[in-house]
Image (cartoon, rainbow, N blue to C red; front, side, top):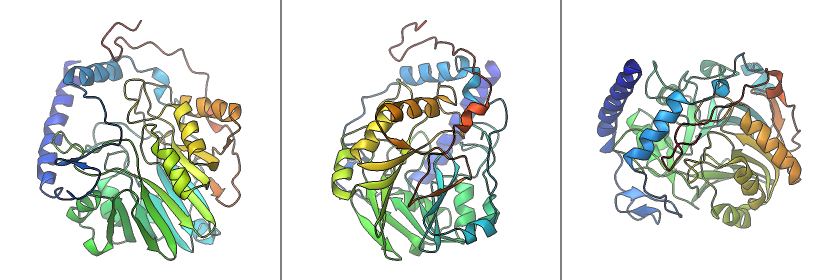
Length: 375
């Protein structure tokens, strides 16, 4: 335990130094309606969370995480080649892991929140480790028309991946402030387009709209909420898709659905949830309701199946959202990592996560969010 705590303390110190170096590039945007003082804010303010709650969460994550929070055998990943991708028809989508989606639209490839690193962490030697390799290696990707980013957390924004793509992608679409990070990492400022909520830009005749989300940002201890977070609507003629990024449930989904829906496919966060952080991640029931608010036709759950970021079993997001979708008449698609999804005619996919052994009973956390014994 002393070794673990020592490593955690070292990680906090290193992250603090890194965040101090980055702060100088994250000013401005005072005119944004989402700005409050020197930081961005949510439509529904998050309650203040003190050091005590953070320590309780760390305690539970370190000592009371179920053993099946991580798969005990390799996930079924469908491998991809560049030749396959280049031969694929337009309106093809491939899930590469977590919230990383590869879309082929109008002959060009677009990728969301690309993370190819082994860990969702500022460090290569500690932090959440991938359950599976990406279906295609980073260096084997075809040239990208664009990159779409939702926010700057490590499981959505990987510096090494961005640096590799800096000369291999033509456009980077980001919420306010996130683009500044990319420029500081070597991305040509002329490639970066930073948008506030409800702002949009056009590329190759397609509309990309930055839409609201209920979340937070930051990569260290002192840059919290210095950059904006967002979801995205992509409109390609008669095709409309929605990418949630990270978000808690809020009434913004209804507004997005009314203004930009209905959506043919919604890619909605369903994973890394917990009752201890309801304002920033949705429970599966919230995810299904968000899809309905968006007036979606097909729903594909994302933000799961790649990293261990919460207290639930790794299969739980799939099991729960599948049952809830069936109850509410929602058409659900659960393709394997690397499996092609036709955005114009989605398919349900198989329940591939059930190929694994039956999970053991989950132990109860020692402390609840309120600090009481939860057993």
